[in-house]
Amino acid sequence: MANNNSDVVFDKADFLARVEGDLELARQLAEMFFDDAHLTIELIRERMGQNDADGTMRAAHSLKGASANLSALRLRRSLADLEYAAKENNLSRAAEIFAGLKQELDDFSAELKRHRILD
Image 1: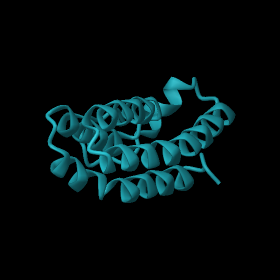
Image 2: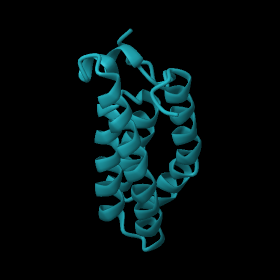
Image 3: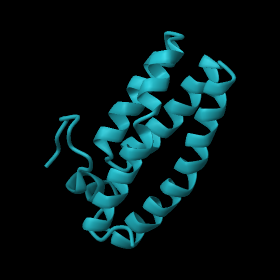
Image 4: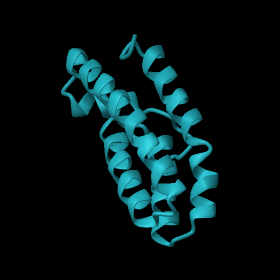
């Protein structure tokens, strides 16, 4: 069910198509994503704390790409919004968006668990 709706947390069919149905590969990619995502979230927090809009934008862009690769549609949309806010040097807006990222990650993790892609 390929869907561009920003309310969709995870597009399982799209993700499984990306990994050609290989559930083991899907699991490995998901685990690597979450290992990296937590580090990148901390990097974004650090960059925002330093009023580093460019660094914030680059880190958000990186995590946005990884989110897209795992078909995490809502998380990708939030990161695109964060990236754009930082690009516009609107760090107050970026901070508002950032405040919801942990919940977005938690929601994505829950969906992967529900689909038995994460333990």
